[in-house]
Length: 275
Length: 275
Image (cartoon, rainbow over all chains, first blue to last red; front, side, top):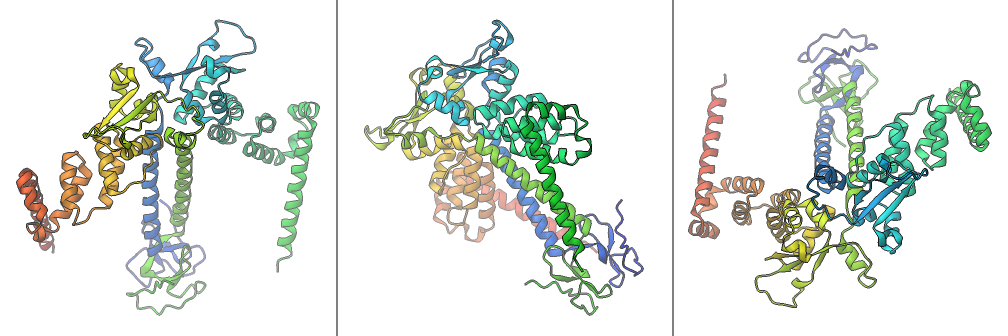
């Protein structure tokens, strides 16, 4: 139970919502009593806000139904469920994961079936590749290099469903593919996930990764986390590695830190000058 | 400017939100002054409600992005834009509108290109038709009877985009197709539109149509409108026509009216018994 006793009013508050002379009112929403200093909105605004909330919820239901309608069954689900019956799902292209090791017969070589129309609709890179009668369009085989079968499968599935089950490694791998094939929605999805998983331990890896793959939102978040912990910076092993490997990135950290210090100083300065 | 002067409090309300002894407070949301009797929520609930609203809006933005990602470009747009270049969009089937008049060379005979995978994904009827190697699957031509080219075009476009520009006639025509090919999302979309356009003039047509095409939501709304205007019922031309053509539907109207009367009477009865 929450208390709404006013801490600054001197009036004695009696817990009654009918006594118009008392200092308390009863909240329409939580039904708790509160004092004048804890007053929120008038009744009219409360009712308007409730209507708005209902409207927003209806809009969400409509959009969810639209997503469910537009969401494709993935040929992968189909592939697995109907593997024995080999039912047709009208695929006209396969994607094949090719690792650098090039070992034949590994799981990587299992082709992932897809539709040219779906690939072209989701990725401008696939669109150009398939519409321009390049090798991939003629052969019906698209080779995706440096990727495991699992990542490729998850990538293709996302193109059909806009959904993926992520862990950090999968998010890193998918973001690389999303960047390469210009699937903006997936890139944003992975970036959001990685930002939510940011911590001091993975901040350096995330920072360097974000820089390499042009993930601005992740880059800013990682940079902010690092510059909040400058006292621990130089003690980290990754710091030394980064100085060796890519000193420009370390300079960026110091520049961001300096800029933050200047801003904080300006803020302090202006607030101390207030009457 | 809205006024929130309390009409039942006897206290003299001074318009100041700093005077803690006065009877007025200032609404956090609309910034107007209000009396105790117009009080809505406490500050904590107001803040929670604002957070909830922000969260719902973020969810809507996410869902809209998902819809934009999953939404297909329609091969029709493609067809028209690139008619001269005849760029490939990997369609593997065409739909042809065939009117009963069967006149060749009319606009109806222009084939509408599509993808088997999209049709099968949106409609269980197309799925069965195409997967079971029926005539349509072999020939790559699906004939849609009793429909104009415009309606067929709009129908196919909806399967790709979940969007359609409706007027009443288009909504009727599309609902029939949606019913026939079991495209639930489109049926609900048309029904919602037709309910929004219901009025006394079209109530009979809508009622009979809804009955014929199993549109429950539209049926209930039309029935409710008709039974609210029973005094005008028997004077309508459509009433006499319906008695001739389908008396069972007229019986349903009277039954609904009777049931409404009984409910209203029961409600009055229970409220008059209150102390």
